[in-house]
Image 1: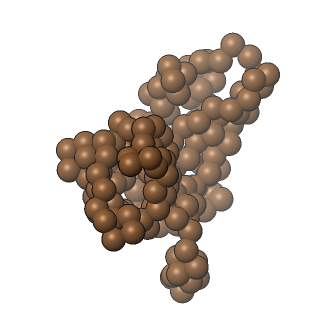
Image 2: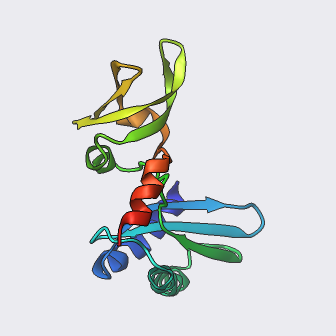
Image 3: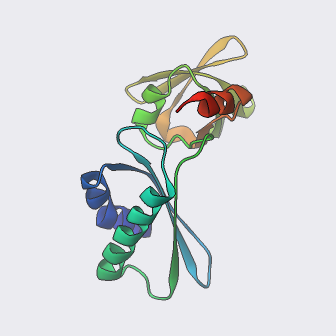
Length: 161
């Protein structure tokens, strides 16, 4: 977690200045680290290959200076995609009304995985409609969450110019 925080601190201010929002930083790999940066445009327009290239060049230069790694590493930059992860508390308000999949660290009535309509967040409590019943859980209890891919989402993307 410390390495992710170091990377975030090194790159996030520059990305914000460039008009992007950092969605998530992830690190994979044992021998050679792969740093995955997920970002989106602040104006909410679709990310392009040029956007990813700009972010990659900037992040690479900043990470070369910060030098948080003890060995070789690879950088991957992507957009969140249509099954966007929900990472920050603000995401739960921004995507209110959308269908989501949530996995919790602890169970609610014997379940840890839920799929339903996001109703938002109040303080640290997230509420969603799961099979017609409102359930609430704390943001800190979320292991992972993401928007669900629906055919209508793709249809809307195709129709959007």
